[in-house]
Structures are given as structure tokens and as C-alpha cells.
Amino acid sequence: MNILLTGASGFIGGHIKKALQAAGHQVKPISRTQGIDFNTMLTPDAWLPHLRGIDAVINSVGIIAETAGQSFENLHYRAPAALFQASAKVGVKRVIQISALGADAKAFAPYQLSKKAADDVLRGLALDWFILRPSLVYGEGGKSSAMFKLMASLPIIPLVGDGKQRIQPVHVSDVVATVMQALSATPAQRTLDVVGAYPLSFIDWLQTMRQRDGKKNALTLPIPFSLILNSAKLMRYLVPMMHPDNLRMLQNGNAASVEPLAEFLGRMPLSVEQAP
Ligand SMILES: NC(=O)c1ccc[n+]([C@@H]2O[C@H](COP(=O)([O-])OP(=O)(O)OC[C@H]3O[C@@H](n4cnc5c(N)ncnc54)[C@H](OP(=O)(O)O)[C@@H]3O)[C@@H](O)[C@H]2O)c1
Image (cartoon, rainbow, N blue to C red; front, side, top):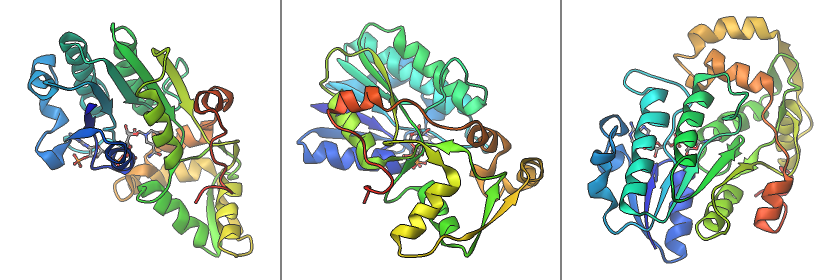
């Protein structure tokens, strides 16, 4: 197939690109690396020239925090919505949207709400679509993976609150496997939560990383949530992931039922112990 892949230069998009090429697909990558900025792609007309001969579209562009010139509104909602509408117009057979866990009726943060807004546009279009909502994705090349690995390596791990937030990290290879299956699976028009084998607490995840490296559990330093929130107002400028909204999303938990994904893949996704 000829596949237009946005965000191909990113962590998840890069892994998807490799898998698509290994399976013999032709990939047309789209992002600023190719000179195409989503901020200039806000209408279906802007996308039409890029969709000639394209059989499927995969959207993997996103940001974890807004910066000057990089808004959730444009990157998560307006440009993807325009891409999806253009895809429907020219008869692209299938669109796969990399959304995010929490982009649902309970969404409260602009990150989730902007993802949901694009997902809702896609759901309303007459083409085959898959909306994949990954939880925290880890694996080679992931920025957050690198940060959590670094945290896990500390002799004393500072924790957001008590560190008991429920998360369900999914290995990038399982995200890729889900995308590959979604390229041809029927019936389409499905929303799937893409999560790891089971939920665990944030601190248990970090301690598991240590155990895998043959290290003993680290001591922990719980930092009251209100204190972290206050320091995040400044820290976010150094570490975008530390935006107060991201901390609130973490505090709210990031887990979902694994059964629909396991049924879709025909196997369980990897657990944090099994993943490479
Ligand atoms: N990583 C996770 O844990 C996770 C979890 C759930 C959902 N997701 C979602 O998965 C998607 C991919 O995430 P990721 O972790 O792979 O992120 P990433 O590594 O930061 O990659 C982001 C991609 O977006 C592109 N991009 C950024 N700004 C752009 C712009 N203005 N115009 C065009 N392209 C732009 C980047 O390419 P250029 O720099 O070349 O423009 C890059 O290819 C995102 O939608 C994210 O919300 C990620």
C-alpha cells in the first residue's frame, strides 16, 4: 500500500515507519522534517496534493505540552481534522489515528480534549477508520522512556505524591503491532485502548526497571502533590512533561481494560517484565 504517515520522524512514528517498510509498504513521511508544518495544513485543500495515490493515512503527530507556535488546537485538532476530511474526499480507504488514552467523555486536559476533538471528526466520516488510544508508550527512542529510566536509576526516587498512580505502560512494539493489524482488520470504525498487560503503580514500574537491571529497590521521596504542582509552574519551561496538566493526568491514572486489545491482537500485549 501507499501510506501517508505523519510524525514519521518521531518516536512512535519512527517505529511504525520501519515496520511498514519491512512489510513492503511505500511510506510517504510528513512532518517538519519534510518541510511540512501542521500549522500550515489547517484546511482539507492544503492536504489534497499530498493524498494523490495514497491508500491509507496514519496520523502520529502530537505534542505533550504547548510551546510558542505549537498549539494543541492546531497540531492535535485542526490539522488532523483537515487531513481526515481530505482523506474522505479523495477516497482514501483507511485512516489510523494515534490518539491517547483519556481522550474520551471524561477528558479534562487540553491535551486530551484536542485529541478527542479530532477523533470525533474522524468518527463522523464515511471511511474505514481506527482510533488507537495508547497509554504511556515506552521503548527505544522514547523521550519519556528515557526520563523514567533516569528516574529509576536514582538511589532515591522523588515521587509525585505517593507514587501510587495507576498506569499501564505499553511497549512501542505492541503499538506498532496494533497499527499493522488495523491496516487491514475488519470491521473497521473502531476505537481501541492500547495498553500494557496489566496496570501497576508508577513506583512499582520504576522499581521493576531497577530489578531488571539487577538493582535493589530504591528508597523513595514522596513529594506532596500540591508542592509538585507549584514547582511545575516553573519546571514546565525546562521539562515540558512537567506541565501541571500532565501531572494532573498522571495523578488521575492512565489505565484501561486490556481485553479488547488482546482480542484484536490475538494475544496479550507485553507486560513490563516481558518487554525488551
Ligand atoms: N509517547 C507516548 O507515551 C504517547 C502516549 C499516548 C499517545 N501518544 C501520541 O502518539 C503520537 C506520537 O507521539 P510520540 O511519542 O512519537 O511523539 P514525538 O516523538 O515527540 O513525535 C512527534 C512527531 O510530531 C511531529 N511534529 C511536531 N510538531 C509538528 C508540526 N508543527 N508539524 C508537523 N509535524 C510535527 C514531529 O516531527 P518534526 O519534529 O519533524 O516536525 C514528530 O515526528 C502523538 O500524537 C502523541 O500524542 C504518545
